[in-house]
Length: 179
Image 1 (tube, rainbow, N blue to C red):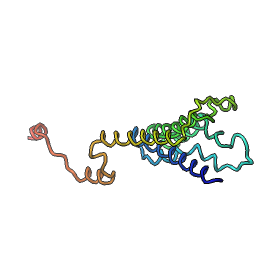
Image 2 (image 1 turned 180 degrees about the vertical axis):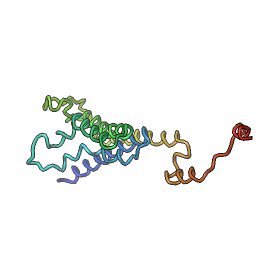
Image 3 (image 1 turned 90 degrees about the vertical axis):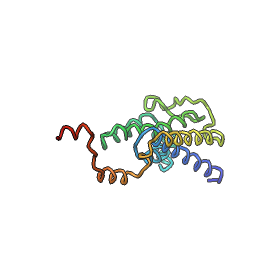
């Protein structure tokens, strides 16, 4: 594989992972590493042997809403946590949304139709579009960091320990009732 193609793929992989991370971090309280993984998951189709053919090709099965829905249903069945499922939907949905805008598009109606892949034909993986996506993700992360109270930025173990060791102070009303 030529160097230009390798760099293109690395850039696309990093972008999908980072966008997934930023959406999960910026819009939920779920561990954003889930966004890193699920934002890139549709591109796991690069791992399939070429002789497997359709639908195990790039922009095949793993780039369909059916795959995303199945994955999210499985995620919910395993953890029964709607926040985690929503976070997963943001991450994998961002990948499908970005790729659906590209010239190749994605197959929105798979398995009903395997040839229909509407696309706006945008160069969403071009250097300019990639930079814009990264800036938007960084903006979301900055906005979320500003919006969070300071205690949300403490490590979870510190918060837990701090809350376990603090004793509630009685209010004047509670003291009066005890007397």
